[in-house]
Image (cartoon, rainbow, N blue to C red; front, top):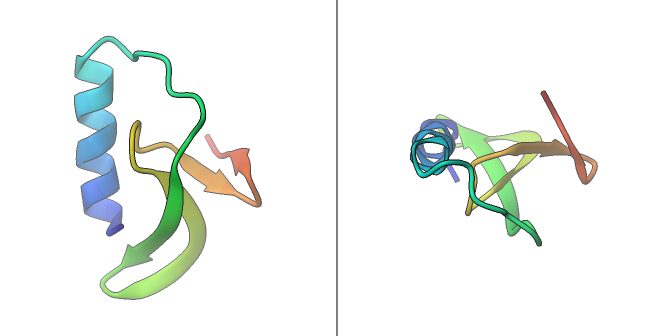
Length: 55
């Protein structure tokens, strides 16, 4: 998932009142087609590094 798409997903999730997101569905994060090394959740847009939430 592109970094900008993850940000839009996160905004939609927050606008919906931050519903429960468990289990997370993680995919690789990309910036301009290059992997960042992080994972992002396709449901809430959260960032993960080595399976742990970041930020």
